[in-house]
Structure formats: C-alpha cells, structure tokens
Image (cartoon, rainbow, N blue to C red; front, side, top):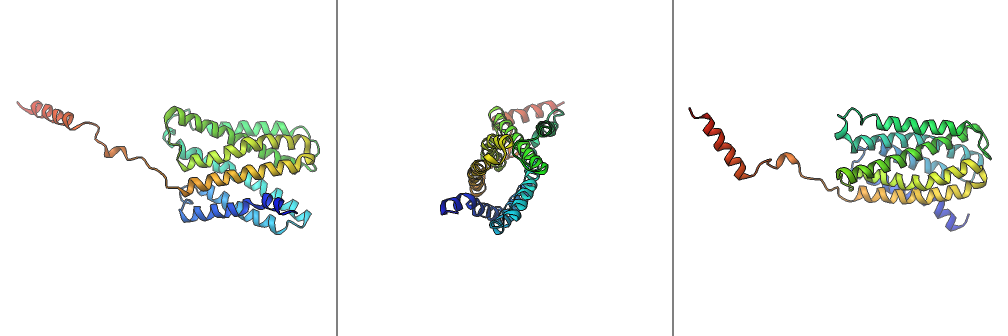
Length: 247
C-alpha cells in the first residue's frame, strides 16, 4: 500500500482519536452520551481493523461487524440529537412521533430493498448490513433536512453542538447514500470507490465535529432575567394597583 493510500484509508483514525479526546476534555459525554459511545466505538473499531489489516479473512469479519454496530449506534445518536434540539416541542402531540415514524419509513425502505437479491454481494448478512447502512443514511439526511428547516422557520441557533453532529452526519450521509446505493446494486465491483468516498466524506464530518466541540458554545441569556415590562410600565402598573386598593 502506497503512502497516499495509507493516509486515505487510515487518516480518519487519528481524527477520531482527537475527537474522543475533545469529548472527554469538554465532558461532552454528559450531554451526548450516545455520541460519545459512538466515537469511542469508532476509535476501538478503527484500531481493531488496523491491527488485522494484513489478514484478509480477519479484516473482513472485523470490518463488517463494526459497521453493523456503528449503524445501530448511529440511529441512537440521531434520536439523541432529535431530543436535544426539539425538546421544547415535546409537549405538542404531533411532534414526538416524527422520529419513530421516520425511522420506521427508512426501515421499510431497507426491507423492501433487501427483498431483491443484490448483485455481486456474497452472503445475505453483508447485504443486510449494507441495507441497514442505507436506511441509516436516509434517516440522517432526513434529520439534517428537518433540522435546517426548523432553524430557518424558528430561528434556532446553528452554533449548537447538536446541529454540528447532525451537519456532519448530513454531509457524510448525502454523499455516502449515493455511493452505498451503487455498491448495493453493483456489489464488489464498486467496493473500492465506495470505501474511498465514504472515508473522505467521513473524515470531513469528523473535522466538523471537532470544530463544533472545540469552540465555546454561545449561550443565550436566560429570558427569566429580563423584565417583561419596562421601568415606566412597571411604575404605572404599581400606581394602578395602589389606586385599586384605596377605599
């Protein structure tokens, strides 16, 4: 393997390790425990794949097993982001079912996709792992589009860490969704390009996460500290109360 290929294939591992360090240093595991678990597993999985990179059969098993677990953790992260950003909408009866309904829709699309035998894929387990990843990409793109829409409509702050998580996933998922679909259709003939594009876009996503969790979060001042009335209005209100109490 050339130096360029080595950097392309394994360059994301030190980036993930740096992200894990930032999450621990900022104690972000308290705010986003599932994203912390996802990052921790990504580092552990990357180290495992690196150790067995010269053993084809072992690498094959480690790669696809870690991909399966990462997909499940990715769904948990999306739900965590959904609850963090839209917690103020939880009282609306129609809003909480949005995420599970979206997840069920993506799952239904994945199942319908897997009913047809994919070309070039060896083994049904791999087909289902790729299909699950395809469903996860659909969910991530849908969540990113929903979040951008809510930011534009309700003026939510784009500097939130939850938005950074979703933005990284959205960028990676948008590109990876296309390549994953091609890999699902053409099988191993598209494997190298599929993996290369996924690695590059995922590395960019990790850089986005690093930036969002490294810079200070701008918090808005609490509204409770701001008086709802001006000083003049408060004086007039008190005068009206005193007059009302007079016999």
